[in-house]
Amino acid sequence: MKHLISMVDVEGELEAIIDDGIDMKRNGYRRDLADKILAMIFEKSSTRTRVSFEVGMQKLGGHTIFLGKNDIQMGRGETIEDTALVLSRYAHLIMYRAFSHTDMVELANHATVPVINGLDDEEHPCQVITDLMTVKEHKNRLKGLKAVYFGDGSNNMANSLLLGCTMAGMDISIVAPRQYWPADAYVNKAREWGKVTVTEVKEGAALDADVVITDTWVSMGDETEKKERLAALHPYQVNAAVMQEAKPDAIFMHCLPAYYGNEVTKEVAHGPQSVIFDEAENRMWAQMAVMKWLLK
Image 1 (cartoon, helix red, strand yellow):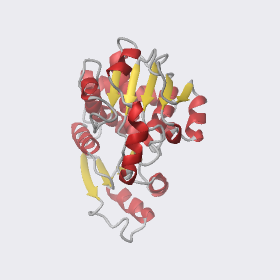
Image 2 (image 1 turned 90 degrees about the vertical axis):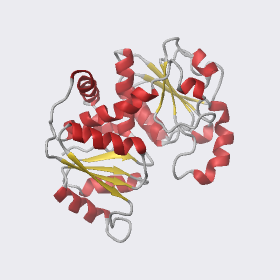
Image 3 (image 1 turned 135 degrees about the vertical axis):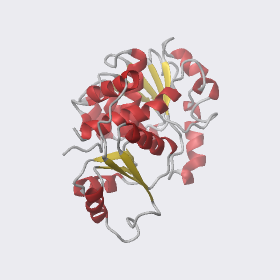
């Protein structure tokens, strides 16, 4: 049985999943998951994760059950193990949007149906599969391209981008303050597949970039560090000057929500090189492909 807990889970399958998402978007889809049930556990709220999974599952003929943190007993006495075993009797898939990667792994270890990581504190594989689908949709390839990520290099997006980009044959550069550099474990694993650079901000950091990426500087759960983070990350804003360093046909991506004036200017986010709303739509298509792959 397969799970999607980390980007490493799609090694050897990544491009096929991406291609299926692009094909469904361009050429239509069938009710391949008719009468299948997706149980969705949300410890952290989200606009895109909930809507994209619900609409995607409906398009494929299936159904979803939304379980917010106040809807279930997990965390209020019932164990993760029992929750996984019970939900496995009702649903064909479980999507979990969690605070803790440790809890994510525990749920997957005890579930008897596939588990999808909808985000945790270590990785965000659904988003990075989406991002790579968006890159391929616009560039017609992944191999040989260069991605540059600006901002918090230690967060879940940076971790999954390191793994996903190199797995797909892309070079990736993480541009971040030293205190927010990614953990060695992610850098070393990514370097098994491809070229990785980790650096502080400098002139020309986006040079030759095909893709420029950023993410929010203050994720849910980091609010107590907001003042410190905004000060440290201010020089890492993606603005018109950064985009001018990149290739003329470079695209800009952000998984949203965006905080204009912090990690990116609205001029860039809503500008001609931005594909953030294609990216948001592609969450649905990429996750449809993921669910089909897991139940294949």
